[in-house]
Length: 136
Image 1 (tube, one colour):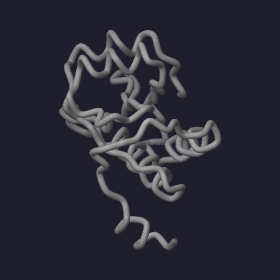
Image 2 (tube, one colour):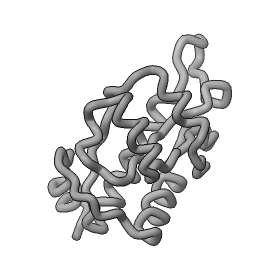
Image 3 (tube, helix red, strand yellow):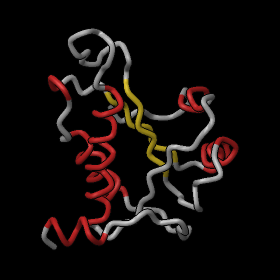
Image 4 (cartoon, helix red, strand yellow):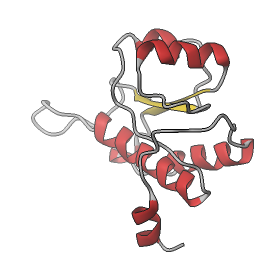
């Protein structure tokens, strides 16, 4: 599939089945995120993988937008290790995390794995993140 076809076919899936993605698929998706460019190559993003029943139930308490997905990747960034633009008012954290997320979503689609960008969640998410394996 060429890139335009890949971009055209990717959509936000709002109904997932209970099948778990394979370790190989997950590893490829995470690698696509690792390879994503970031400002000054600081690579300040952190990707958290949530697959356990306990973790999924905690996610469900934070957002109504999981749509039954058995795997969730949470992308965050270290606000103390981002490129700050001249003038010191803005930094690259959100942009870089967005690029990483987009790379992972396109990689997933290239393998036939659907995804959905969710940015509607409780700000107490950091509490949940403390108990999950960080990929980066």
